[in-house]
Every structure is written in C-alpha cells, then in structure tokens.
Image 1: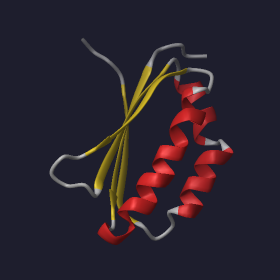
Image 2 (image 1 turned 120 degrees about the horizontal axis):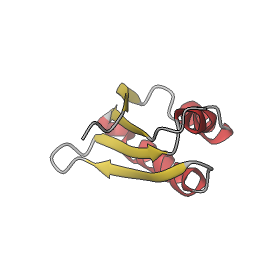
Image 3 (image 1 turned 90 degrees about the vertical axis):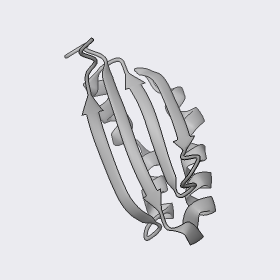
Length: 98
C-alpha cells in the first residue's frame, strides 16, 4: 500500500435554485467522512463571490483509504440526492511537492 499522503480538491458548481439543497447534502457528508480511517481533514468551502461554488479540500493518509471513502454509501446517497443540481464537478488528486 502506498502510504504517501493524498490531497483532494473537489470543485462543485451548482444551479442557483438548487444551492441550498446541495449545500445541505454536502454538509451531511462532513462528520461521517471525518470519522473515516485515513481522513486527515475534510473541509467544505463556499465561494465568497459566487455562492453557487463549493470546494472540498481534503487530505488523506493514502490514496487507497481515499478510494474506500469514494465507495462508501454516504457518497452514493449524496449523488442520488443532488442528481440534476450540479452544473460542473471537477476533482483533482494532488501530492505535496514542497
């Protein structure tokens, strides 16, 4: 198992009329995810100028444990609950280089 720490940046742009729904669903993910093995931090941000833009900044002790997180039921429930509400989603797996 690769024990190198992994940083995830997930960008979620939502439809304005669905903003509160998506925000509520994103907030539900936090406590459960923070309790998962390997989660170092899992922080949700909302853009100050565009309230329809959310960003998760996450650090995981390994890519393998992040992948376990990605397969969890609570993420599947989030995807189902927010179906049709997301305009754009991007996810970057990143490694610290300095």
